Image 1 (tube, rainbow over the protein chains, first blue to last red):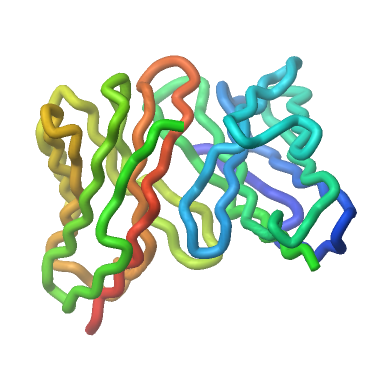
Image 2 (spheres, rainbow over the protein chains, first blue to last red):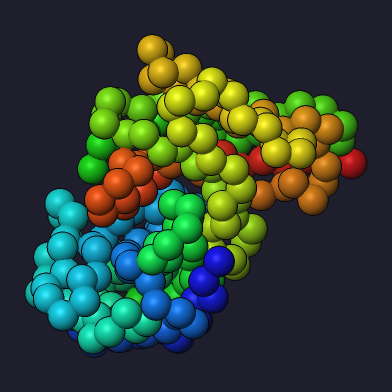
Length: 115
Length: 113
């Protein structure tokens, strides 16, 4: 399966600031997704990162709050803008390989705490 | 997102026992049903998955049972071990196209020695 590196692994942020999370994959992948996992909760899909075009956002998530970039087939960023304590979560990058079985692989996640 | 309901929320099993986690889905267009295992501080990892053309899939101590008419599927962990203690998520998606997973709420399994 693909190896996914996420940075930062954790951060403590001040209210009102923005933070960008990076996701780097060791091989080209077809699909890249960003999920949010609030403490002790399940995973909720934020958006699909589309290469060279605007991301596809799920209901309840908007581009102004969670801008996403995907400049190529191995890299994506998620920005959490104008953060509030409610944004304290683990943000996970996940990818689907271009070939082979339908296996969604996750990074270790980025744990954000907003004070 | 279409809902996937998972139960129980938590489960305590003795070593050697059978752990059973259940899920139900609503969207009949779903045709891929994986189970993910997550340890603290780690991302979820695929454990086992099933497609609706079969009613059961077994990999080692892990078995998925699938009931298409009832729109339900379950994970059975045989001979549960302390190392199986983790959070388990069921999920569902289309097997084509975007294939974004919708996750259940998770089950925290604790296997006591």
